[in-house]
Length: 217
Ligand code: E4P
Image 1 (cartoon, rainbow, N blue to C red):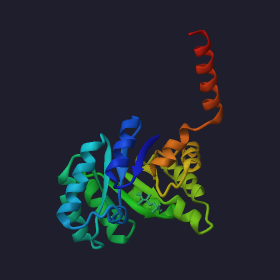
Image 2 (image 1 turned 90 degrees about the horizontal axis):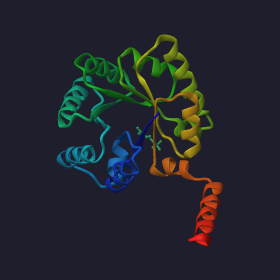
Image 3 (image 1 turned 120 degrees about the vertical axis):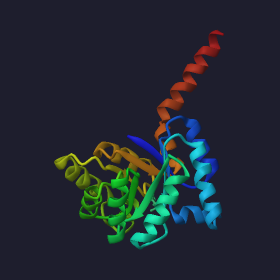
Image 4 (image 1 turned 90 degrees about the vertical axis):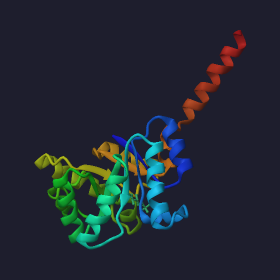
């Protein structure tokens, strides 16, 4: 399972990279705005800065909602750095653009996916990644994890190569449950990854080991 961090905060990306288990980064326009990254040139520079910190894929989202605009923006994003994956919204023109990029060998991430049918379309269009938003489904009393299970089932039926990128992960149990269900990737906050470290028996066990060592040394 790949671990992506879902932020545009360079300090957090560095911290996650230093942990040694980071496989990539996802961003979106809201995450960029949260870091105060505005203006065309600043946004492009920020993507390159992220690519220079991590070794894996970095999803950069287009703003255009029409096919021609998405192609123009996506091609410029893909040219920025070899690690860039073009993130496209799950709308009609987004699917057309996904197919276009797939034919050109440019990697894509189809985002804002909330149903198995949308995920099926993304795979048919040759998406590299599909991003079902599990946290946002949970927010409206719908089981986000069930969507991961449904997509896994459909993709396995036909050996689709599109990777299931569980997005809108909010906490550590989401990470564990997505791993059980066979999501290929998860993207979440650093806290959702660091939560995997925690167990009180590890802490008390280590304290006892160190205490016993100190007695004889
Ligand atoms: C990542 O690709 C998504 O944009 C992100 O996970 C959305 O997360 P949110 O629902 O916490 O905003």
